[in-house]
Length: 329
Ligand SMILES: NC(=O)c1ccc[n+]([C@@H]2O[C@H](COP(=O)([O-])OP(=O)(O)OC[C@H]3O[C@@H](n4cnc5c(N)ncnc54)[C@H](OP(=O)(O)O)[C@@H]3O)[C@@H](O)[C@H]2O)c1
Image (cartoon, rainbow, N blue to C red; front, side):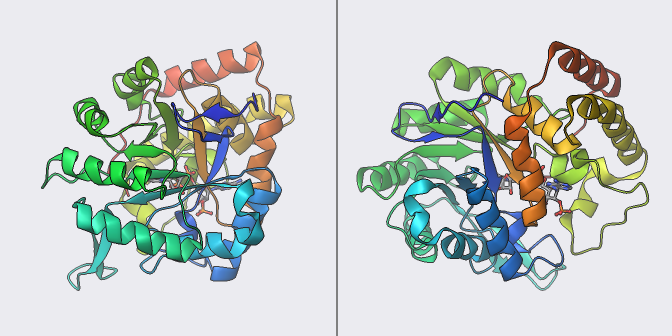
């Protein structure tokens, strides 16, 4: 994998090819992730040279992900790139199981308050990268962008990003505030961004940071065919984990296994290395729930694909076809 640091647009911030996505560590959609495991997982990432830590105000009902980062990073703040997100929070909703609902609120006063709280939880005075988590359909995106511009000017963020947005909204945002990065989902079988958003970002020098590279764990190659997700694991809601779709996706994963083995790597390494080398992809965020997963995935940094591997992967992807993404977290 090419380890050259990659710039976030015109900002002073650069990242390595892999980052740790700290959503699963919040324990909201995965069972058995303790606060201790969360801290150990982040620490393992930093130790392994995965220094880009991606979190959000809403990763945990009470900032569990941000607090784990603070505890793990400690005095090594200057060695990590912390990316945060604002504009989504949780509210109690007893009609749902679990009893909460996600609220998108990108009003300036809400953004300002969330960033202040995130900085306190993280124990830092700035985020290296601050994204608007998703456009708020109830207000013009310019209002949210204006607040991010103010936070950039105030030094509370060193680079600005927008996540989960269409190209018209990216363009409106960028007209109001410097846009250094965009964050969207992307993996071998879910490549919708290649149609519009990725070309738009490439042509404007906006970095593309991608999530779900392991398709929420499916492409890691350890899921049993009879896996049943408990109600508390949000993956049970996605079509890619259900019925025939799930079986076909697991067949696809099996078709990649010999490719990884020939290179002397594991499946997650192969998948992450392929994702990181796709044209226009600046950074790849993998989630993990244990130090062991982090250490395995970090070995992708030493995984170099050859043409034989690329050809085999291309054929496997073509045979499977693209997969509907379903609902986003
Ligand atoms: N901007 C947004 O709206 C948005 C949305 C989603 C995610 N994100 C960010 O992107 C990050 C990545 O997305 P993600 O975590 O949802 O999906 P992902 O990286 O595709 O999958 C992560 C899951 O894969 C499994 N896994 C990882 N390494 C493994 C290994 N070596 N062996 C076996 N299983 C392994 C773990 O599942 P188990 O939990 O079963 O152990 C882990 O939770 C998030 O953490 C978050 O920071 C952003």
